[in-house]
Image (cartoon, rainbow, N blue to C red):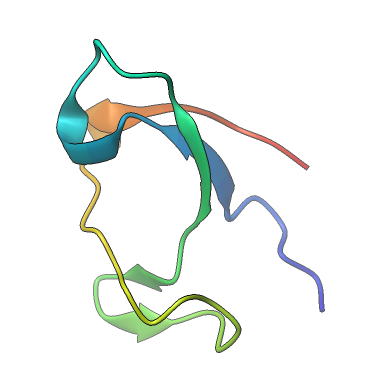
Length: 54
């Protein structure tokens, strides 16, 4: 499976005092991109994203 640029580092709950954690974007505007993620999702705002990684 090719994840493209869907892998990101972000601040959980937008809390910049925490260490950024790796994650994978599953939905953008409710469009499904991957079926192989944890069932627990967190809505992340663009401002919470530090970077993407490969």
